[in-house]
Amino acid sequence: MKKFSPILQDLIEAFKQLPGIGIKSAQRIVFHLLQDNTKKALVLAETLNNSLVSVKECKMCRMYSEEELCEICKDNKRDQNILCIVESPADLIALENTMQFNGRYFVLMGHLSPIDGIGPDELKINQLEELFDLNPINEIIIATSPTVDGEATATYIASIAKNFNIKATRIAYGVPFGGEIEYVDSNTLIQAILNRNTIGNQN
Image (cartoon, rainbow, N blue to C red; front, side, top):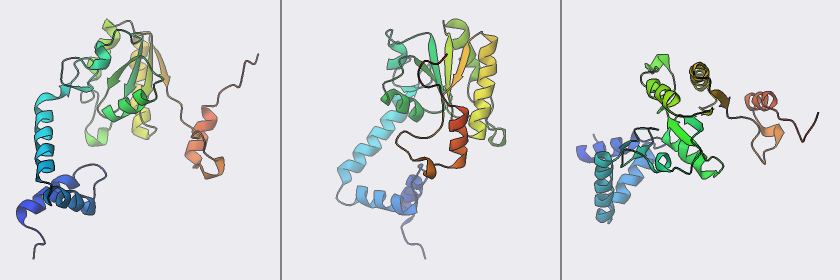
C-alpha cells in the first residue's frame, strides 16, 4: 500500500534529489509548501522556472549569470593578472565572502574523475587555456578540494599553466583557526605541517 498519492510521492522524490535533503526533510518541505502556503509554492515554482530560462554560464568564468558576463568579470577594478580556479559556484561565493581576493575566477563545475567520466572536456579546460592565452594572467590560485580527485585536478591545471609561463599556487590546508590540535584529524595535521609558514622576518 502506497503512503502517498503518485503526484505527492513524485514531489517528495524530486526534493530528495537535492544535496543534503533526505526523505524526512523532503517530506517536511513538501508538506510545508502545500499546507496553507499555496502562494509560497507558486512563487518557488515561478522563480525556479524563471531561473532555468534566464540563468546561464558567464562566457568568461562560467559562474551563473543572467548576462553574457557576470558582475565579477565586468568589474574593471578587479586585478586582471590573478585568476582563482574553483570547482563550483558555491566555492566562488565562499571565497568572495572572505573579501580577501580581488582577482578573477574560473569555475570548473567539477573535478577530474575518470571513474565518473569527467575529463578535461567536461571541465572545459580548453576555455581555461584560452583565458591563459588571451589575458595578462601572471598567477593562478588553484582552490580545488583537498581530495584525491581535487589534487589530481590541481596538478593537471598547474602543468597547463606552466606551458604559458604562469605561476601556479595552491590554497593552503591545515588546522582551522581557533581549533585545538588534539581534535584535528591526522590528514589535516599532515597538510598543516607540509604547508607551514615562516613566522616573522627571519634570515
